[in-house]
Every structure is written in structure tokens, then in C-alpha cells.
Image (cartoon, rainbow, N blue to C red):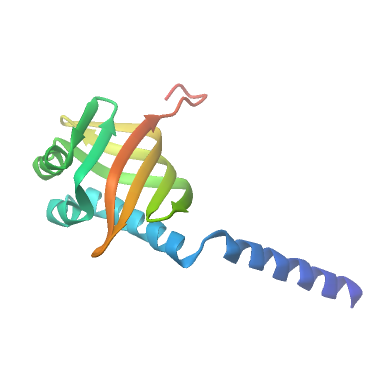
Length: 148
């Protein structure tokens, strides 16, 4: 009986710690990011254009550019973000800014060639009157033991 109570207490404390990790606002950003990855996979350029702030910036391995170029690249298929396997995610909220870090394996088609890369992706969201807008998306390629 004593062991059962101790086990139950440990489980409840663990659940409380897990629930405390993400506030509702942090969870909202995590879900928004997941939705963004799906829109990118589905080439939903119009939905992405609504999400991206007009002053947003995008940093890739091949350069950096603004909203219009990013939306056009997605629309044309110049980069097709086929699938982002998310391994880790964290969110920090500072006033009206949310910084989300994703450790992902990205399967994409770039210039007609399928590539798979491990990335740490930094997403910066700004809370505006009409909701959260993406202000920056930056890819940092990770070095793994397999050479990728």
C-alpha cells in the first residue's frame, strides 16, 4: 500500500511538471508552428502569406530574403517542404514575442532534387491585434555523426 501511494504521488508530480512546461500561449505557438509545417508541405502559399508578417525574414542555407520571395518560392515549388519530422520543440515568450526552437529532420525538394537535412529551426512570432504573425524563420543545419 505504501509503495502504491508513493508511486501515485510520483506520477502526479510528474504529470504536474509536464503540464507546467507549456502554458496555453506556448501550446498555441507550438500548434501554430505545426500547422505552418503542414501548410508548407501542402504548398498552401496563400495561408502562409497570411501568417507571415509583411516585414518577415527567412534565412536558408542558400541565402536570406523576405516574405514575398518566400511565398513565391513555395508557390512555384522552388522549395517544397515535403515533411518536417519534429524531434524537439521549445517556446519562450517575451512580452508579445514568441521564440520557438524546433529540432527537425526536413525532407524537401529543392530544384527538383529531394534532400534530407537535420536542422535547428528558429521561428519568431509577434503577437498583433489580429493574432500571431511569423516574423522570422531561420534554418541552422546540424552536424550529426552520420555526416549530415
